[in-house]
Structure formats: C-alpha cells, structure tokens
Image 1 (cartoon, rainbow, N blue to C red):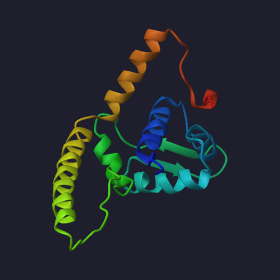
Image 2: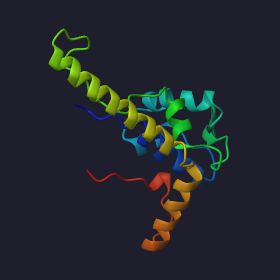
Image 3: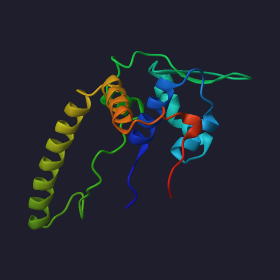
Length: 156
C-alpha cells in the first residue's frame, strides 16, 4: 500500500518557503516535492484557505508564507490538508457477522482511535518554528551553506 506523504511534503515545502527571500513558484515547489505543479497547487489550496500561504500570479509571483511560524502547528497543517488518513489499517469486513471478526474489529478500532488521538495531540504540540529551528541546528552541525529551494536535489 502506498503511503500518504502529503503532510511531510507540505511541511518540507513550507520550511523552504520560510527561508526564501521572495515568492516561490509552483514549479520550483513541485520540483522539491518531486511532483507536478498541479498537485502542488491542489495541496496548497487548503493552506491558502486557512491563511497560512498566499499566492500571486504573473512575473515575480508565486507562493509566500502568510503566517508566523510560531502560530502554525503540524496539526493545523494536517487539518488544512483535509485530514488525510493517519493510519492505513483496515478491517477484513466492516460489519462482520462472525464473532471472531467482531472481537478483532473492536480491538483494532479502539487501538486505532487511541493512536490517532495521541498522534493528533503530538502534532498539535509541534510548530513550524520548532521545525525551522531544528533545520537551522542541523545546518550548523553540518557546517553547510544554506539549503535553498533552487538548489534542491533529491537523490534517487
């Protein structure tokens, strides 16, 4: 099963935008995500609706942050993406008649709800500012030049 990387992808893009000196085009951001600009624009729409980013068209246009990194949590970004599934486990049957399957569904259902609640709580405790700070710490530790969007290269 393919993993949903939307949250990770968008957080990656937002951190690049945070250090950008101006607007970033959909094409440049999509290249950093290794996706199509149309996919990027679709993902960014929810962030724009929540006021996290702005976009402008034309020469010199693109995407910019419209919020403070201190006020945006990973949970708020997740919610702006439409709350994609956090856990991909499923049931063999949704409404089984088999008593064994009913017991399995109940146990798995409770465990998944508990896990999702804890994960959402933790996502609500981490801000984009904390991620940006961690990134800067990693850059200092590696004594590298700033990691810029236009220099973004994925190994692969």
